[in-house]
Length: 371
Ligand SMILES: [Mg+2]
Image (cartoon, rainbow, N blue to C red; front, side, top):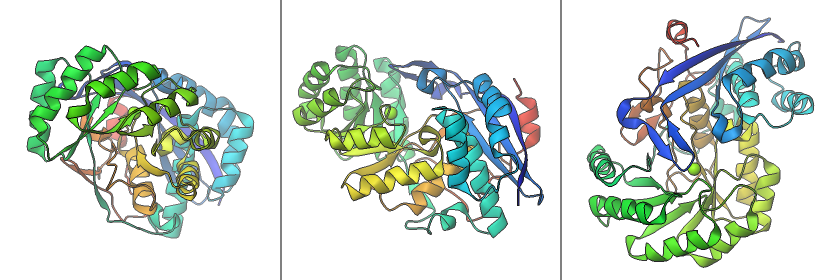
């Protein structure tokens, strides 16, 4: 089997008004996606999704489409789509970084490999080590007090056990928000916070000190990208566990995190890591070094959410029971891309056991939302 074509489709989907996201990175109101369709000479097709936000990885739908059309397609056309490592090597040699763009092609090739083998992707990854249904946390934006209280109340009613609160801005306002969420959530639910690189080490440590009574379990990405020393300092200086996210895109970053003893947990997902295989490689490397993993999100649509689900189901060290992740992206948006969308019921997400990623793209929906 050989790849004969790689198509790119740019779409733009609005978020549901109540789900619009606010963090120290700014506001998120509309999601642009590049949907990738990889075609083979056997007639088997695969789909992938580049979940691109320029503020997050520097990639855009236009840069992703241009890189695929002018550089990456030429590297993968004519190759065996089931040779995942060979494809990744060819793409890496042709272009540095561009994680989400490469991941779109890579996950489409897993989709093809699964369909060709008649097996879901998690089987190709070694088989299910947990149920196809798993529990997620909810990520509450850096909202003003009244909205934070309203949303937290709704989340408790929807059955969320873990609420992540965005911080990383003005510490007074952030601490007030965490305190409101604790008040609404009561003592029995878990609260984690995420600064998205927004604080320096001293601000992060002082803020945690002031939040001592609020029983924050995990502090995600307190300090800036690239500053391993600051993150290690925070980990030594606070009670909550530290989770790395925005600082870790590849194996080099994962090695530095572990070498510098920066974190207890690393948040990973196929898009950010440049593909399913690279994500699994880091999960396994972390496991060998006694570091847990959880799943993060860039507000994926159904295709990339399925890719995340297969990784969770197949990887023991993706410890979503202890550190629930964010796999709720499709539910944030006003429309769904798939004829058989990922099942999302409050905090519970279920992937299918159908071959490949298990997603049939509704191309009419894609047509209606082209950019
Ligand atoms: Mg994060």
